[in-house]
Structures are given as structure tokens and as C-alpha cells.
Length: 336
Image (tube, rainbow, N blue to C red; front, side, top):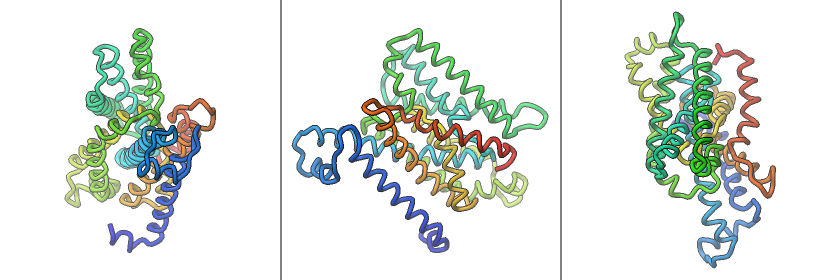
């Protein structure tokens, strides 16, 4: 990593600037909200805790909220970057490809029909749902004479998303108790999520982050075409399977913590490629950092746009993500 930074001083400087932005957003998330505090209050909450409302809010609400947003944002940004590179599809995203919807559907089925409320169970169900949805989308996108294409993948993802959404809504209408338990979670939010939520899935996130960066160079080679990659001695199927597993871990763990949050993974790879070009290692690094920054910014905005009520963070990301999706789609699905 050190040599990478030394060989790319401008990109390294940009990364430092992005990390400083992330630091400021984390600070803003800690001190601003319905109850405004200060950095000194944050420090006192851990060094001179007195049980005041401000200290309780800092320790029980805002610190877990910031940590969840950082971890989920990095995961969603990386998932989008790996997915777009693997499919060579500029509109690839866990939300648009049905991965979020599949993960959420499996969780809702478990709550509605089996009364499952264990976070550990939610995690494994989210992984399974994301994997099944991804496999179905891949198979549907591969049908036809011309095989796998970006347009067919996008349409297959939209179909699975719509089907999963309809199934979820039907089950929740028939089961009001399940509706009460998962309604706000389904809208996507890092608010009200305790650190236990993150602790349960963080090991999987770490593994997926490491896998994504280890796969950066093989994916870079894969982008030259399967024939070229095989000619260079790459086991293309193994790379694709490993990348798919990383995407499932990134998506499933994010959904387990925060519910289905869309469009972060769509936006960040485009911003990363605009800033650093198409070198996958840098694209992945920037995508992770920018994903965390976007999610934190959306979470901060969600507290103020309808104050004192709070808008689900998934709605905030959609406000930016949908116009961005239309813009990218108009440029042509055949280009990446």
C-alpha cells in the first residue's frame, strides 16, 4: 500500500482529502441532531460520564450510528465497485440487481412465518437471500442467444426487485406483528441500531473488504476480456466466484445491519473512476471511502429535512440515486 501511495501522489492527496471529509462528517454526525452537543461533550461522555441526556445520546445513539454508517457505507461502496467491474455494467448496484431485495425478503419470511428475531439468524438469512437473488439474476441475464448482457442483467435485477418487493408487502399485510417489527428496518436506516448489530457482522465485512482488495488486480485483468485473462494464466471462473462471494458478504452484512439501502453502490464507483481513472485498486479504495461519506451525509440530512421527525436514510440516498441512475442509463448501458 505504501508503494502504491508513493507512486500516485495526486491520488494519495485526494484520498487524504476524502478521509478528512469523512472525519468531519463523523464529527458532524456526533454533535448535530435534535439535541445539539459539542466535541467536548463527546469526550466527557466517555471520560466523565454523568448520566445526562447528552451523554446518553452520545454513547447509546450517535456513536453506534456513526460506526454503523461507516461500516455499511464502505461495504456498499465496495459492493457496487466490484459488481460494476465484474458485470461490466455501469448501472450495477446491489439495489438495482435485486440483491438487497432478496436479502430483505428472506428476513421478512423468517419474521412473518417463523417468528425469528435473532440478529445472527438475520445475518445468515441476508447472506442467503442475496446469494439466491444474485444467482437468479445471473441466470435470467444469461438467457438468449447473445448470452449475458448489461441490459438483460439490469432488466432481470429490476424484475427480481419488483417480485421480492411484492412478496414482502403481501406477507407484511397479512402479518401486522411482523410489519411492526421490520417496517422501519425495510426503509433502510442506521438510526436505532445498537453496536451489537455491527459486531455480529463486522468479521464478515472485514473478510469481504480484504477479499475485494485482493481481487482488484485479477479483476483488472478480467476487464481485458476472458480470453486475454485466460491467456495470461488467470483462472477466470475462480476470480468470478470469489468476487461473487465478496459481493454477497458485503451486501448481506449491510442489509442485516441497516436494512436495504440503495444507490450508494451505484454512485461511488462512478465518482471513483472520475477521480482516479480505471485502476481497480484505487477505484475500490475510493469507492469504500466515498460510500462511507455519502451514507454519513445522507444520515445527517435525514435528521433535519423533516425535523423533529426523521426520514429513513434509504429515502435520502434514493433522492440522489434515482436521477443519477437516469443520467447513467441515458449515456448507454453498453458503455462502462
